[in-house]
Length: 136
Image (cartoon, rainbow, N blue to C red):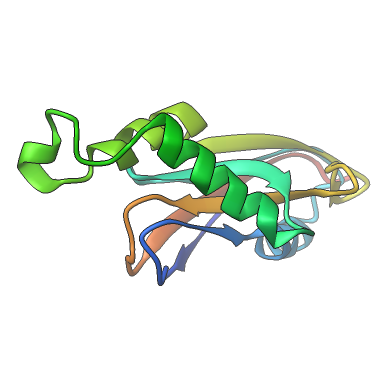
């Protein structure tokens, strides 16, 4: 089963928790054992798994990325000024695959699936969720 949903973002860089949305798609699929792939169809966004309980983790991640990959110094910036977003997205990755057991994501206690906006704000960030497995 495959389902797509969209997000709108409000900041240039932000992390948005999407675990609840992904869980609802898994429930709809009725898959009991299998895998779930979450993919963003954008070159300046990413999908990660990280803690979402403390919002400072999200801010710390953005700060670390900005220190490692500063804006405004790359060749692609001459085109549209977002080379840092492309580099960060390539490092973080466009997708995550999570096991499903007993119809639920096998995430750790503090883990959450997040879409990382790196060149916002944007409307209609596409997230594609693919669920594969057995229904019994």
